[in-house]
Image (cartoon, rainbow, N blue to C red; front, side, top):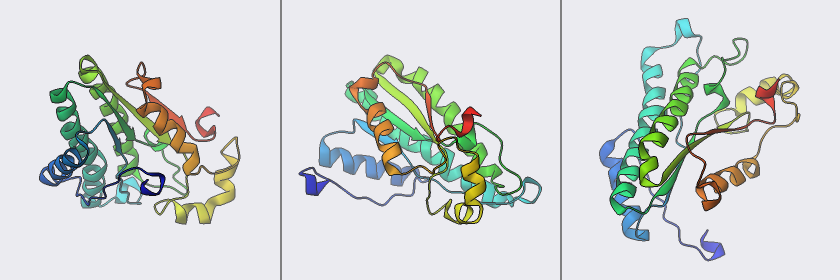
Length: 204
């Protein structure tokens, strides 16, 4: 960002802690005069069959993914309402929130449940904040190589690719355009929606 002449500010935050969340929102506002766009992209996961899922791990995933998304949206949304200038919120969900898991290679009931919750939360915030000119949308990525998915992709690559009509995994460029669109005036009449970016995997 700075290399292209823009301004950037990196801040650490525990998204499950309301005080931490309020702190980073305040720092961002002080640095830039306000927050016009929020992209919620913090996430956690834990793999285990549902019958064996440790409840503390389930709670941890739900806390980061659901509570964290809500706390960030609440803190930023509140300030957008107070400022009266509208804004855009983009929540990163997952296709895992739209379909069931794959029992033979992906057992992540907490993650899947949390991503489904984010989709429902997105709709609720969208209808609640529409009168204030705030759009709230979600993105549901499919298989993208990340630290979370890297091990699974390495082990089941061909099988996963067989389930993707475009027969490739996603990359950062595949998501950037969608995020920019939803954050821009071009999407000012789009709210409460979940845009699936999965190479066609959920189109089968």
